[in-house]
Amino acid sequence: MESIKEIYRIGNGPSSSHTMGPKRAAELFRSRTPDATKYHVTLFGSLAATGKGHLTDVAILDVLEPAARTKIEWQPKKFLPYHPNALKFEAYDTKGKVSDSWTVYSVGGGTLSDGKKIISLSGAEGQKIYPKGNITDILNWCEQRGKTYWEYVEEYESSDIWDYLEEVWTVMQEAVQRGLENEGILPGPLKLQRKAASYYIRAKGYKASLQSRGLVFSYALAVSEENAAGGKIVTAPTCGSCGVVPSVLYHLEDIRSFSKKRILRALATAGLFGNTVKKNASISGAEVGCQGEVGVACAMAAAAASQLFGGSPAQIEYAAEMGLEHHLGMTCDPVCGLVQIPCIERNAYAAARALDANLYSSFTDGTHRVSFDRVVNVMKETGHDIPSLYKETGEGGLAKGHPM
Image (cartoon, rainbow, N blue to C red; front, side, top):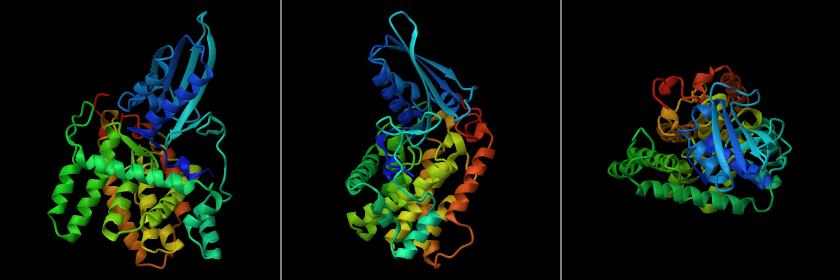
């Protein structure tokens, strides 16, 4: 299993798989074809179906057009075998012949694959650093040693992991704060009004119990709206679900005055749970639906909250299990191919669910019948059974009938 840095990617929205991934792919292809006189890029499957709404073409053209004339071809009905989000890059020489060709897949969370292995930030194969690849084995490791999940992360990550997570936390906080200040209409044909600021103001007028929930909503909306506007955010585990983890941690830091060190440890734990899903199932909405994005984000946030409140490794696992289990079957159906409806609202609701999962778990000793790993396997099976029109193609569910 790779570093949790692969779960927490800092970049601009609105989509990790449709914007960040293709942009990285374009950068890699441009670097290996410096003498190209023309580029031709073909987008397949889900990447083509909702690419315009996710600014896929803009992300690619921003990289390639300064180097050479670039044409983009859209093939939404053609799905390549490995993954629904496929791109084919072709570079042409001075004689008009193809000098280089590369097919790559954007598999979720900004991660790329060549169909055989994951491509790391440097373009090489991702380094496996964790010896255990599922939560059951990691839980046993923790219980046998009297340690917790963040200590497992510390055991195997490089020495700069805490510096990296501190940068992640800074970007998350800034996204919340910007989102609470910004008002107006989000980009795109939906003309969707930002709501974070108004939710924040209204929440402040309620008594403690309702205020708490309203503030969590406002923080999640703030980050998700920043993402929808192309702002700087952190994938957790994706752009489309980037509001859940920061909203929960921002809220708990504020009302409970948790130290930065404890917040960073909670981020490490959350990243570990997201990482196991990425390894054993998927965090790509195009592959398994929104259960792999917002569902996983909810599990990550629930695990983080449970740790902050002193949960045992078993209670933390239980909180994460509930966060994911109760999103099983959730479709990915973005209206007009935008990460706005229903994505933004789902982030707010999942943040509240994460806090409830932590509370529920805290009333138990962590013993339960269905493990987190079992839910991950079921999520993968369910995702493969869901028809493709409900997996980020913009053809089914809430997206049906809306022009792209």
